[in-house]
Length: 346
Ligand code: KG4
Ligand code: ZN
Image 1 (cartoon, rainbow, N blue to C red):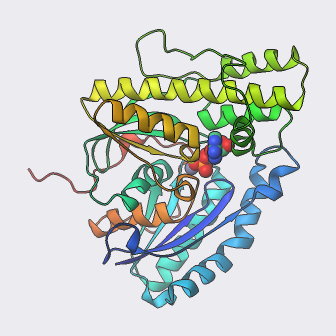
Image 2: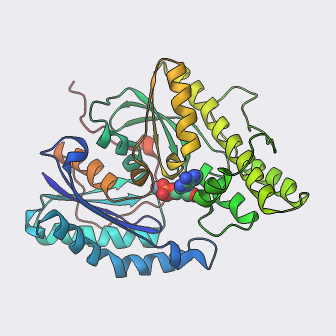
Image 3: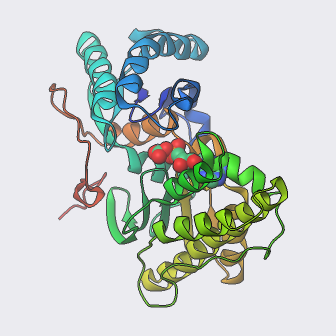
């Protein structure tokens, strides 16, 4: 089954074709991502209306380009998958509208995919032998969640952030130190030059039991330290390093706890912050020390993309699931309400 995947939940237009005749990443026939970073940069963050309009401009050309690269025509498609939430409502509607129209015209099934399920399943593209149960750490600009994956489509929330998401903390901290949007990757690059231990920040909520996170206080700590410093280039790198170490340590401590709580030894990491090299190294060490395993998608599949939506949609469509013809999106959507992909037979 050849599935067109469309991602437009935020500031990236992503399109891909996934073919279920192949295993893992081999099924990825073509993919393209257009990032709106330059468009939003001068505003210091994503402007929802501009995001929607840019998806309108870029989506159809990107669909044509992706099909061209795959050597396919629209007629070769057997299904369409699109991000139906969570995300910016106007942006989601662009992808959902195009996806529904294509499916209608071709008379093929279509399905709305949960953006975070897309992230969560992306690691399976490159590790096709990976199977539940495992624990997933979802770390993006909008989410920080620890999820017990009992089966594909069967998700139990173990813990989540009570305020800022990890990516949001990276972005806001970068901004207050004067780095341009989107700050996360920039701050990580700067931290490479910083000295470990020159600034030490708290590891929030690690001194008590539980699997929830809180990152907003960390941002305030950084702001105070930064204001009281000489604000030089070297100091900025040291502060960035201190912040990154605090976030990475906090995530690693909670991941170890979540693995204990779930009685699991496999950790899967997904979402934009999963591209962070220090996080990857730290979680790898933690997993190896426990005699377990950690799986990350390649960095390009950590941040928003159409491949993860095509793949997650293909799994559900090939299990016989599909949505009705309404263009329906869900800006807020609880992953625990999703249907299992292959319902257990009674
Ligand atoms: O998953 P994603 O592309 O979009 C959302 O669904 O939110 O995640 C974007 C987030 C942003 O907050 C960005 O700053 C962060 O991921 N991010 C990083 C890195 N690359 C992306 N944060 C830290 N280090 C990175 N290398
Ligand atoms: Zn995302």
